[in-house]
Each structure stands twice: as structure tokens, then as C-alpha cells.
Length: 360
Image (cartoon, one colour):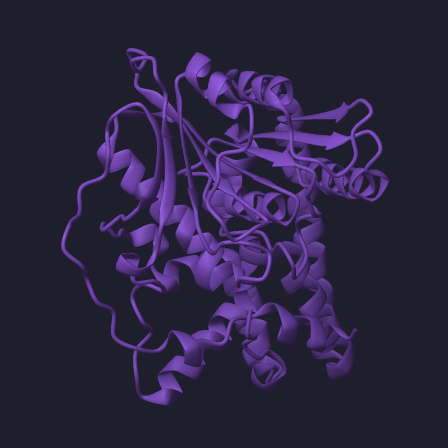
């Protein structure tokens, strides 16, 4: 697939998001310990707004083009992508009282469409004092930016408002395709999620599928986010995905990672023992080597500046086709780390028509 085609595939259809947004009356959310199904939330917040999700999860050129599409339509971007009165969630509240700092929270993105608590997890959630929340109709057939991401963000927002939650222990996790979405949420929202439990699913970051967010967010992700990869030892294809993802993380200066292979296990959801190990790692203080991180960031910045210099040189020499290709590559690789430079270069190259919104 060409770079243009990949951009076309990875953007968001703005037309589907242009509409008026409604609010619903607050509804009671159960606070008693145990499992609660078909919970209806009612509270919205800025992190789940369409524009904010797209700003964080699209490449700079795709986001800039989306804004132009909306402006040309003469309408406005819908504030929130979902109407919460139509959505259902499952919440598990530990049977033990919250620790002094509050419960932890695990927002779970499933590959299936029903909202369920995985078997055997409740005892670990009890032991670690962690609330669990997951949304219905958030499986692999659903769109990421228009459903799965906002459902996870709204689940977090409403759970935090209802229960006493420790902000240092708010995690996002998922299984299989849901794990890949969880990874993107951890990358885009390190100011909300302090870590991610990636169970049998991960992708490299720093491409059109998982572009880097704005620099301030990415710096926070590098510094403090924890990532725990857990995959069955017999799930060879996913282990390969994990390896590529971890390699990209190291190249982009993310070192707070750990991976585990579950013996005699294929593409299966984690059992209680794996969940316990993951939560133990996510709760630990970041093991950040400041010198190593600083040196890595310096090399990454040098690579970025070299890429921009090469584009400008090609442009000055009249090699516009080469400059366009290099710009699209830099847009996918560096994303929000160079948003202003990339957009300025795109305008010089008249790249507007090459970057189109996508449907998912």
C-alpha cells in the first residue's frame, strides 16, 4: 500500500462526526461491592471529545486535514462521539474497602462485544483493591476513534467520579484486538492512564497505525508509563507482534516495559496469576534511568531534525515528489513530535489533497 493510501486508511471520516451533541440526566451507578451489569453512565468530559481524541490519536497531517474538511462543510464537529444513554457498561467493585489512597482502576477494552469480567479475575481485583470497568459493543468490529476509545475514556471518567480512585493506579488493558486499542490509549492519554496491561496484542508505535501524540504527552509517556506484555508461549504470531512493539518502544525511548510468556498457553486471555503479576508491575514506581532516557531523546531529536532538513533540502532543489514522500514518512514516524513543522511543510508542498480522512 502507498504512503498516501495508508494515510487514507488511517484517518477518520469527519462527516460522520459532524452533528449536534446531547446530554442525558444523571443516573445512579451502583456502589455496592460485586459485579454490576448494564450500568448506564451519564457524565462527559473533555478527554473524550471528538476533537481531543483526534488530536491525540491521528497524525498531524491527518488531523489538520480533518479540521479543514469540517471547516469546509460549514458545520461543526460533534462535541462527543457517543450518547451515553444508549451505552451499557459492566463494573466490578472489590469486596474489600478501598486502600487509604483509593481503589485502583482497570479500564478493559475487549475484542468481543459483550461487557464481561474475565473468569478468575475478581479474586485478584479484590486482593489488589482495583475497580474493573468495561463497555458493551466495544469489540474488534467497532471503530477505534469513534467508539472503542471514547467508551474507554468515558468509562474511566464516570468510574473516577463515582468511586474513590487513586490517580496513580489508573490502568488501561485489553485482550487481543482490545489490547492493541489499549496500547494506543496508553500512548495518547498518559495523563490519565499510568500503565497498560497488553494481553496477547500489541503493535509498533511511530507509524500511521499508532502515531506519536503531541510532544508533551509523549514525554510523559516515556518518563512514567508502564507497559506489561503478556502472551501465551504457544501464540507465536502474537509473540512476534510483541517483539516488534517492544523494539519500537526501545527505539523511541520507552523503557518501563516488561513481557511475560505464559507456559502451555495459546491465544487465550490471561488467568488470575498473570493478572496479578501485571498489576504488581504496573503499581511499581517507574524504573527510569535519567541518563539513558536523556541520551535516547537526544538521538531521537537528531533523527527528527535530520528528516526535516532532508525534506527542506529536497524542496529547495525542486524535488517535490521526493519531498512529499519524505514528508509523509516523517508524518507517520514522528507524528506529534513535529506537528507544526510538518503542517508548514505540507502547505508548501500543497499536500492537502493527499491526506484524506478515513472511515475507521
